[in-house]
Image (cartoon, rainbow over all chains, first blue to last red; front, side):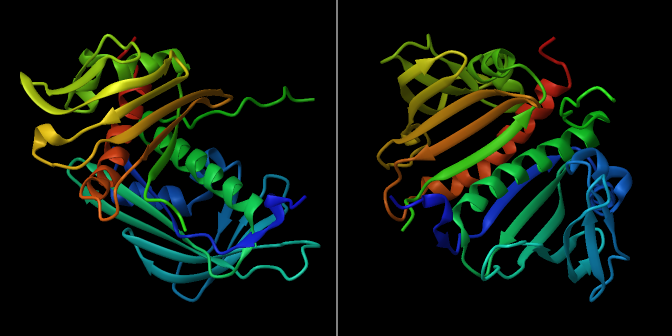
Length: 160
Length: 142
């Protein structure tokens, strides 16, 4: 039987649009400061000077490197484009980095945030679904954080 | 080849019963959707989306195909009242309890090739669903 999850395809661009009652500057700050990302991005912190050509990385709460890449376009607070690479571990023939673009524009009394994920090489199908699911959670939580002061909370184990 | 369709997922920090109430009650939809929804929500029943300031003026309508409160709703979507003469498409809402609240999925499908409706709804749903999330999380439903 063919395992569909391992079949590789080049997915179409994933585009997510969220309207957030906030300012473009606040949305930019939330995407580029660990103070915010640790709250809405599965506990990850980010490091970069966010200048064009600079490296950037995302690190898990336990210090493990999660995502890394280069800043392709930086036009604060309106556009940020990054290469998005992960350590594929033992995956043979690891896929190339994806390109993530955040477009931030004023739309009436809200901000329109568009996240576009552009994938340039074939990746196993199982990661496509998981990735789309992850972005829906991250952007939903970002919106809650900026509008209510609280992200969507994942119930944590009590401290040991 | 992918079929022309629109799929959107949003997570809302509230139980699914609250989200269901918000999306199926005119008094709520008129606030975040700018449409007043009217239906008795039975299979085969008509669903009407009226302009809130003139509740005799239809924006669009449809028919309930499947309903399982507060989990799933399938209805047709017809924009003929707005003068768009295209065969009705189909909208599905799926609500799932998640540790973050409710996972709300909209699947809008059944479009003809070169649909005039698809580009419009692709712009519309993110606005409506972002607005619904703000409305529910701000505690306006109590």
